[in-house]
Length: 436
Ligand code: ATP
Ligand code: MG
Image 1 (cartoon, rainbow, N blue to C red):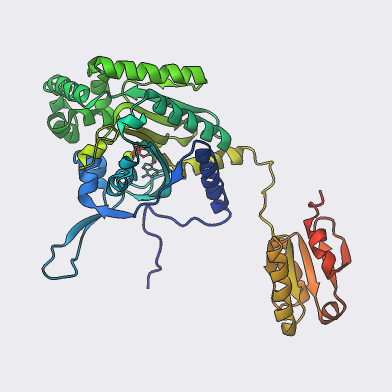
Image 2 (cartoon, helix red, strand yellow; image 1 turned 90 degrees about the horizontal axis):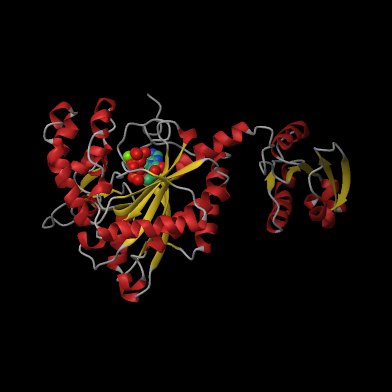
């Protein structure tokens, strides 16, 4: 019988690596809290039409990357429903914003999420079929200031602070404006006309996009198409005055706050709902999959899925890619000792009759906040010492004598010293910093 493995493009995350994942998530929670964002958790699957209508039918995500199935109806009379594992989380957040009438509060809603997303992509380093995103959205009625360029600048400044606090040095903020819906329509017409003589020399996807959604041609990754794409008109030349002013206010605020950025007129992002400000943070250490995160404004998204006018801006970071970046950095600084990997003590009961008292002692110490490994009375002392040396800073021996007298034998592996310690003094002894 063949052995079962995690499905291609998915993977298990094991300790100690999960400690790094937790550190990133904790830093995100701490930083976002300082900007007064609250957490939202939406379902992992949604009605397929949510993604078709928000992300866009012509995008790579919707046209070829979604995990979709017909969910059998419970009653014969009901039609099966087309459901999809979420490929991204903004659509779900905006759906929830509409469903719970959050706009009626009149306040800007500042929401963040952490969770897995699913796309049927060709798996490679930094690109998986189940991957994790940390993202945030600031969305609300225009009266709540949701259209202000200050929101864009604040989100970008928050991201710069988050990456700096995480210790990710050397990121680049790539910034562009894709204009309002009207600007984009104008640009699409310009592109469509420009592509008439060029499309026949391009890949089949671009030949289709040139007719259906010319903007998507700029997403093309086929190397032979890149010189042609370079000659196409730039979106910046199609922007209306409002979009130009909005973008100028964003960049002015970033300059004032000291957040460095790089203008990239080709950055259009792979989702149809973006308007005006769009951005990516990239990192050179990631190779081909160099985008740490992406985001932008989506002023018309709520209306496109049947909601009220609710302009917003948000981003999604690839948690897997943040982990890869930090692992590469830690490998560079390999002199740093692994932190927090060992338990404070290993309790070794000398005989099976001491298992229950050992569990009691472990319970006391764990409730006092210590990290404890519990051995087993069937182990010989030598085996206990070997296991303890690998997993803990101390071994605490619990034999019949120790139980009666209340005096425990403790060995500190760092110093090699073995001492007798009254049970009541064990917590203060374990709390002492590790011998150097
Ligand atoms: P890319 O150009 O790398 O495919 P994207 O434009 O599809 O990215 P978004 O949909 O904007 O990415 O998602 C935001 C972030 O989520 C990306 O910048 C990346 O860090 C991460 N991400 C996207 N797809 C994957 C994936 N398949 N595996 C791991 N991380 C991913
Ligand atoms: Mg992609």
